[in-house]
Image 1 (spheres, rainbow, N blue to C red):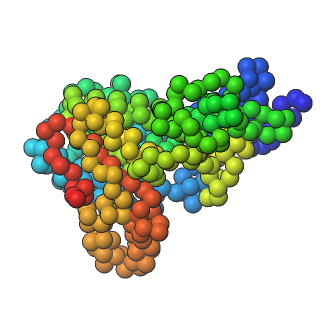
Image 2 (image 1 turned 180 degrees about the vertical axis):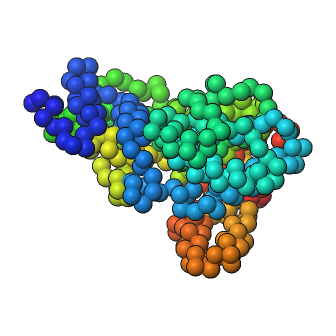
Image 3 (image 1 turned 180 degrees about the horizontal axis):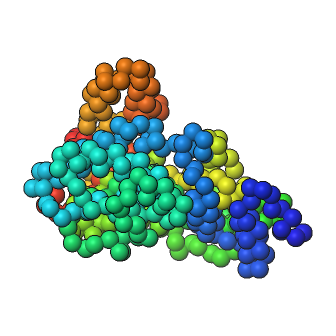
Length: 358
Ligand code: SAH
């Protein structure tokens, strides 16, 4: 069948590109599938907010970004207010977090140079209207190598492509994606991958999936190396787990509903849980201090988000209920408070970050 027959009004063209590629060279890895699907997805439209596919903490309430601005400003003050420093945000979405955080930081005298690392040209445009003073980058490499770095990444690492290895009858194989004429399907690939699996897991039952995120690990290590050289801090906030686990955590969300990750590539947001145990290991390898992970709810409450909500509610009584609802979404353990975790890296000579005690 001619793949072009499938192109509907919403088609990103990716389905036919994948089908041609798979037809010509064989199945593609889950990592390749996820990377291309998300690159198309984030360039296609603004996915955030109630009219989009999903909503993130900074889009729920300004209080989230404000707490991050406060957290950074507090450390900057205790670090002796270095004149030259850089706010660096990975995957800033609409720029809401940066705009809320920088507004609060400025009240404390912190006015860093602003660097936004964003892959989507569409979202770069949205960020430009909120943060016109920013400089945009494809990665950390072009960010200045002098002056402490204040790095923030909220729901960024979960969008990076995961690699999956599956235990088949014959041994371990990379999990790959083929097209069976009707749909994309994840299957065990042909090439042996037994040497990629640790001895402790080698004899796992058939069907076991091991997931890693080389892109996230590589980026976290690059961040650690830069903090070691320049000092400063990095704050990672994401949906994830802190003890190693097996199984696929790949999921797709479209219009606030979970959908099949292998249906309609490029039209749904693909994410995987972040491995916080791995982020801790990387801090060790990069020789920077690691704080956390702690639950997002505990962290925000320790920083005073409860008091901030009460203050805002007093000054805008008509918004009081909406503010309390937003607070609840951000901090309650049955909402984002426990599933979302906060972890920080701390470079040499940089003060301890609030909210990570105990
Ligand atoms: N941090 C924002 C947006 C989260 S969505 C918020 O909390 O609202 C993920 C963000 O990461 C988007 O801005 C997306 O375009 C960006 N992104 C995803 N993969 C990327 C990559 N490989 N390189 C750069 N940016 C990427």
